Length: 130
Image 1 (cartoon, rainbow, N blue to C red):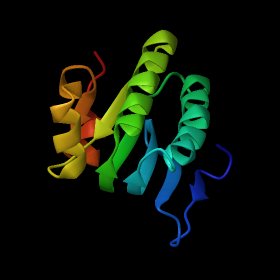
Image 2: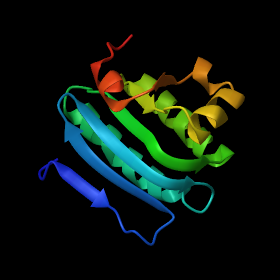
Image 3: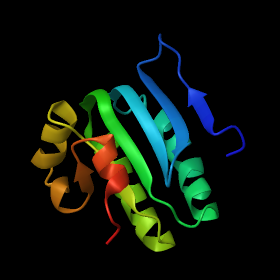
Image 4: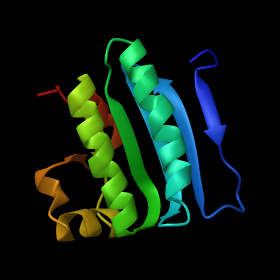
């Protein structure tokens, strides 16, 4: 990333994202509601985030759901899709899902057994890839 930070962040949109290189990780911050109408916004951040991660020595991609109010099944499917993309290219996907709606939804779908979930951004960044 040449600027160190790219944004798609407008207050009137139901989903806002911001991507940045933060130390040894590419972090995609997400805020709002992740459903079928907003899924393309996050997809539009994940594709270049994984490309950046691959170009920078396969650093982890961290999706920070701290400011997400709601995650529909289509959002969970997108995280699973990019978990598999990461497995194929050797780029770990880490998901920050503190206590709240996103974590409850991911656990209800039993995705806590597939995805690497962390309660905070510092913990996700500090995790050792397995």
